[in-house]
Each structure stands twice: as structure tokens, then as C-alpha cells.
Length: 621
Image (cartoon, rainbow, N blue to C red; front, side, top):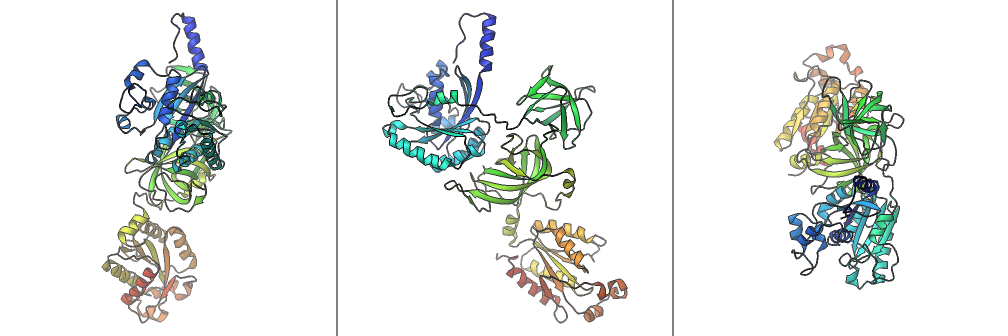
């Protein structure tokens, strides 16, 4: 550790602290495949930059896992958990700190095991630079490609490619050149500003802090010199102010402040701000930090902002720059890194955590999964553990977002399983649909919020949920056919329900209300049977539209002749001139047609069963 002079006065000490605080801070993450030597490299960096206390060194000498008695196993400086030490691997993300004359550093040592990729995402999400280690004996592995792709996806501008364990390949330049060529061909399709290859031996310290005579053919920078001299990229992407409100502070009647963290830009007293979603504006009256007021504050400070005007703002709302506000949207496309062992189920409702908001969200489509060998997109019906792909999501409440490349904090989110409360995915927004407040009146309230997907219900019920609409003249036998089919389905072990407007339970309901109910029941896996006259094409089209494109729907035209219908009219419907056949428009596009002139409802139901089997609605048990 850097030492304070033994003899100093208060002024000299203040000067020393000021110089320390003014040094640039570089956050970097070490990634790679298992046992590539990430922890050893970081331990070597800490040791050779005097970033380790003497008692720490003594504590790890001769500990199980050391190379030889009396020698230091540098990986033990970062593998702090007992389980990690016993297995000789990294499980959790280990953060370490050190400083040099030029810069301060925060290191994230992440696991290499495939099942801990989610930990790697955590460590890389706040980094300015990545170090990817490659074992010189094995070269570029699938996990190497996965970590490099994720680092690029997360927006790390630079990647230092440390080809480690050169001592185990006799410091052969040809081995190094072959690995660099292989990795460079892969990384050419990624978004790095620079990839810098360096041959090292972390165990012996070759090219880590100092150059080595073992590789005279290499004349580039060491790991440390590159970390000290590489340019820092402004990761904010935009100066637009972003302040998600964490909580509202009201300690007394004369104080109302909005507490949270500034995630982008800066603000000063007197600035005009806009509140989302209301879009009302006001000026900053005061900025409070702890027990004092300050004139200006910038990211990533946590402050309390007071406004001149009384605006209704609560947790989850956002204060933004009026001239460059965040986009308000419910529909967004995003890159997803799937982090759960259980694959993604697009039919389920998940929770989406974005800034200080947590909203329910549905996936409405997968664009594809990335093949990490070719970097091409492949079709996918789901995302499995560690898959990377793009998907479209629709949230149940509006979000205030930016593209991830412009603002990391408002462009990122996580997906949460609402039952287990486990984080299952990490997302980076790359596009969204522009929207205004009026568009939020059309929220899809029909889709049920459920942790049971359509696929799971199909497997359990041995059927595909859907809606059968029966149309035809009054007394044509629509209800009798629907009830006969319900009976047949039930006897075969399937699940169906009839929603009949003529029933007392549904009497007086608007047909579109019945459609809403039918939509919900069908989404729950039931086969819903709706016998209704629906005399006009406009009414039939409205019913289909209300059910939605995602609901399997079939229109059955019951073509019983008018004479038979009149003979069966025990309710006197045809006595009302409004129900004459002339008011019934011919069905233009029925999926199925059936007449009950000479066929009983049960026989017609058997015919309908064959249709359902042929269409794949009924599965074998």
C-alpha cells in the first residue's frame, strides 16, 4: 500500500489527500474460461504494486493451494470465500482495490465457470475496461468467445487480451501469434474500440508489472503500463440529466424533497427539470447532500432535489432534462443474457426492474439467439442458461428509457421471476417504440398475468386453448351444438366452457365483454365455446379483433335452414321483425360450416371433434 510520509504537517497531509483524490479511477474486470489464471493475475498485480499488507501475505503463505512450501499462491488474495479456496476456483465476484502514481483502480475478478456467467455480467456491468485471459495451452475456447461477446454487448470500449501461462508453452511466440490471430478474427465482428494482446505469465510476473527477458520478441506494454496509460472513455454517452426518484422525503410540512441517484448528467440550482410521466416542469430550488445544501451535483451522486413548484412525483418517476427527455414507452427491443438454469418461457409474465421501477412484462417475440462461433443469429423458441439473443417486450406500465449505448443506467434492466424472486435475465435496450400518453389508454388488459405459460397449460391439459364462435340464424342450434361439444370434450378428459349470451348468467352482457372473458379463459388453456347470432360481418370482425391475433379462434357457421329454424322457434324470436333472416348477413369467411337440418347436436359435435383434432387443438394423452 502507498505509505504516508512519517513526518508531515497538516498542510502536507491535506496536499497528499488532494493528490490522491484527483487521480483518475479506472474500473476493470477480469474474465475468461475456468482456470485461466484471472485470480492469480490480480493477486500478482496487487503484490507487485505494493497493494497487499504484510499480514495478508503471511496469512496465505503455505496455505493449501500454494504452488510449493514457502511460495505464494497469488490467487488466494482474491478467492476469499471458503468454498472458493477449497475448490481452487472463483465463485463470486471478488472486488479489489489498488493505486499507483498515475491512477486508482477497482478490479472485479469474475468466475470462469459457465454456470457463473451471470456473475461475470455483474462484474462487467460497471467496468471501463476488460481483461480477458486465455490459457496459452488451449487457445480460444467457447467461454472465451461468450465473455468477449458479453463484454462488447455491455459496451466495454477496450479489451486487453492477456495470453497467460506462456511459461507452460516455453514462451513460444508462434503460440502467441496463433492465439492472437484466432481471437482477432472473432473480435473483428464486435464493437471494441481496441483489443490489445499481451503475452504474460501471471505466476512468475512476466509482463504483468515489469517486462521480462523470457520473451525478448515482445516489445509492447505490460499489463500495468497499459492500465495506467489507456485513455478513459466517457461512458455516459450523453449529458442529458437523468434522476430516477427513489423516495419522497417529507420530514415536516415545510420540506418536500425527491431522493435518488443521479445516473447521468448534472444539475444545478435554478435548472429547469421535467417530471416523467406527467411532463410537468419546475426549477430546482435546492440540492441537499447529507446535512448541507450544494449548488451543483453530477452522476453518480446520491442527493435530494427540491423543486420550486408542487408537482405530484413518486417513486419510479424520473426527473429529466426538458430539452432531452428520456423516451416514454411500453414496447422495447433488447439484448438478453439469460442467467437462469430454467429456460425462458415467453408465455410467462416476468417482473422487469428498470432504475427505480419494477413492472410486469411479457415477451412478445424472440428475434433469435447468437451463435458465438459465427456471430450469426439463429432462430430460437426460448433462451437457455447463458444464451444471448434479442427479444421484444411489452411492459404493463410505461418506462422512461434511453438506448443502452447512450445511457447505461436507463438503457439496462433485469428480469425477475416473481415466484422465486430470482434474477433470470439481464437486458440492454437497443430500440423502442416512441409513444405518447394517449397510446397508454390501449393497454392490453386482456392478457392475464400468470406464472403458468400457454405451453405449460397445453402440456397439462393435452389441448390448445382457443375460442370457437358459433354464428347462425336464431334457433339454428348454435347453443345445442356448443353444449353437446362441451359434453364430448369433458367425457374425453378435456376442459371446455360455454359462454352463452342467452344464459341468465351472461344475459345483457355486451358481446365484446363476452369476448374479453373468452380471451382470458382461452389464455388459461380452456376451449371456450361462444354461441351467438352475430348477424353482421362487422360484429363478427369486432369479436375476432377483441379476441386478438394471439388467441386461436375459429368461426363455425351453423347453416340450418330458415324453415327448420322457424319450426324450432319456441321463444317467438321470429315474431320480432328485427330478427328476420333479412337482417342476418351471410357469413363470408367461416372456418367450418355445419347444418343441423338432419343432424343431431351430438352427431355434429363428433364432427367438430374431428376438426379440432385435425387442427391440433386436442393432443393425445
